[in-house]
Image: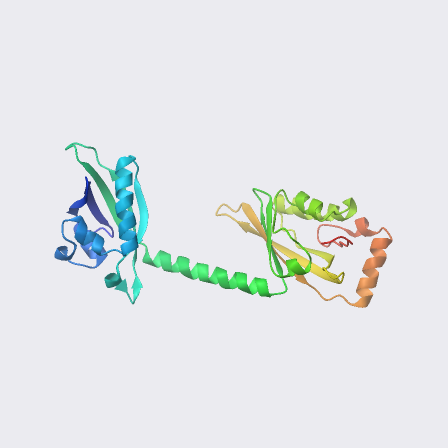
Length: 278
């Protein structure tokens, strides 16, 4: 009676009946005993029509396939909270067939607050993605476990980058952009630091856009860690930076003079290339 969950027993033959409803179920569903009734019809009427149909199908399938029951469903329009349908989660298992009848014991909990938070997070993610797509930055997401690099942002098209996913980064990125070894070296160093779980700082390079214009860029990475402190992902933001004519001239002098490798270290890297990307 004091549980924050509801308990039901379904009897499933050619139809679905409910042979037991706990007092907590009435409290959870926000209704009285007569309103729910001890039968399937009244209970299912309290659900969103599409979800009621899916729950019926899932119950029949679970009994037939000897499987467990696990799904979320919404309340009907008449069971709204401030105009919003409430969300519930139901989980159940088949009871031993002592009477020769298929029965399933199920527990219902409300998950409305979780669903609202999930929807808000989704809305925030959509806004964030739209903002990135319209901005002058590029997002790099590196999965440290699978070595998959994913990029997004409108500036990728400006740089002539077709792929959005690179497996086994940075090798696939180096191959895609046809980078010479002296340019690929500091890129490998950056990724080695990330895979080792070290904060890699920032990474500077000059890209050429699809019109052949030089575009100085800076990438900053930050590691994401799990509850044990182990890094599992690295998120980087690549954005254009201002570089005056004097800085550009010095940059070219260093590269053309072969001083490139001597200046490349783990904290500040100069990178220049004439190919599509770098």
